[in-house]
Image (cartoon, rainbow, N blue to C red; front, side, top):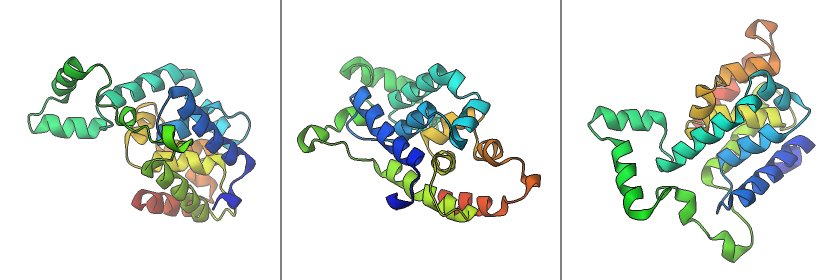
Length: 201
């Protein structure tokens, strides 16, 4: 699959590893892929993240991811669902952190296998994003996998990254329009198919 990656997509993957290294994370996550995309310059994905105002709201994105890590990686929908059955996740997080320190529920803090292996593995979620980028590309009829396909795959995979992006106005549809124009411009039928496959993946 990696032979289909454009130079920019390869740079994004390498950038995600660098993001994980800088954060001292034990593995490369979807969040690291997004942060690497935000640092890319030139290309369609860079244009889209700028047009959607994501670069200007980097501090807000970082804060949203930090809060999600405190919740143990649960999405806002998960938190709302728990609240619906009377479970106050905020209170649970506070009690756990009171006993074990801030960020005790951050799953990546407990994963330090990279110290022994010398490299950081990609999480199953990050691998799924890479696979879904291929599905998005195929759905659009593209023979390559570019940063734009990675960005669309991040918005299509249910989870914290897609939730945070949606909270910042970057839904799958909004990103697709920023990348390729409105549905009325044509050439978008395959893209919807790519979204369906990506979400199923």
